[in-house]
Image (cartoon, rainbow, N blue to C red; front, side, top):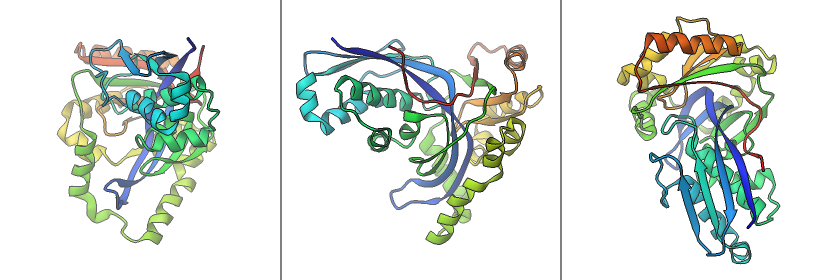
Length: 314
């Protein structure tokens, strides 16, 4: 049976601005998304039983139809029924390394890997843009996860413009294993408190989305200035999450004491990260934070920014 093994990197937000409401119930966003080296590994193999079968080495992950990886395979079956009939079903095995419910796109990147893997298994020859269009049917983060790297994301997150990413920049990630923040709650809470700041008319909405392309953080990324990037990082959702989740606020405050470039919550949380300009500094920050907060529920990772998304390794 044909098989592929793929690497599915996590992502963080370097910038997240909520601009307004959309007719479909989502928010208009302006974001800068960034892939990181922390990644899941996905094995995908043809089977001869015309079924999608999903396995995972983490008990925290449901292996049911609700799983995004399963839904990605199911989408490919519905979009390409002739190929499904020709090549048969797929067995998918997820080896999880990305923390669950962490605001790091763990489920989204697994789904992206399944789309890429089935494209290869069934010899579809899809382009990156075609894969991104399919990914957008599943979720807002998934198109970015296909190609990864560094990108401006607008709309609900599916409209992407690539940027030249930062090199030699490391991060320390912190996340309480048992703590989860509901993304729908975070956006709903933000709407209830700050909807008066939303841009209502179409012309100004377009202007604001376009403005991020020439914003200071984009200039800093283009100049490979990690220190300036760290100073310009911004996440609107911190306004509602940090007051409600003191553990997340404490992580950010603790990071700020150390020798870092900057710190921020990723997405709707509860992960918090610190940018560092060397691996040695990142490792020391990890040690310092572990000594300050010896809670065994706190997961800490040292990883780095990368310039790619899904990769096939075998």
